[in-house]
Image (cartoon, rainbow, N blue to C red; front, side, top):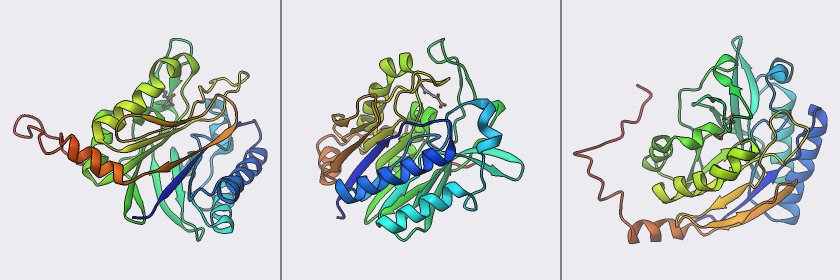
Length: 278
Ligand SMILES: O=C(O)CCC(=O)C(=O)O
């Protein structure tokens, strides 16, 4: 079994794409060279702040744009898997909130387009209306490191229990969600959601947020974290820019599943999950 050392880069996102890309590359280098991670994760909208009026300006084609070039080069130069948080993808005249995944040779090994678009007033302080801005994706996305299958979601996706359970059914042992939650909602729900998805599905779960920026329109909660299949938080960031690193003891997945065999005991005669697309 390939060991996974995951690094969540809680990036301080500023209002200039080149600065964010440069900062990202520096932090990917540190995550690999100094902290010896073999899987590096970036936050949702890591290359530009999360604001509706900026989307067209920062949108790029995948894999043709400067953000993909930067991530591909970093993955190859440092020899590390990179889950590229999310970026605004422009495709066929539409915008998607998309995560790219890069292998250690710099190859694009997966892309995931956010499936559940967020229309919410969150805590009552922040309003998000993504269905007016983006087109939703329609597919699950998984990739593997060694024999570990990893499933992807973005932010609001973390609230949909069936979606995460579908990933467990598809064979995932780790779920990764780049995300931006506002502070009041984060205080109430962030850790609870990560623990719930981990415990329900007996998988590792990682949420990766940008660092807190009190001048941003949507002030990110921060506190990126990793939860194990038993539902314990094994690493947690503060609200500032930092890299949190966790060794995933992947044997724990089968241990927890043997000790608590809920997936064998589901009453699929009474309830069952249909996995699409239809
Ligand atoms: O689920 C949340 O609390 C935040 C969701 C969100 O802001 C988003 O998906 O863009």
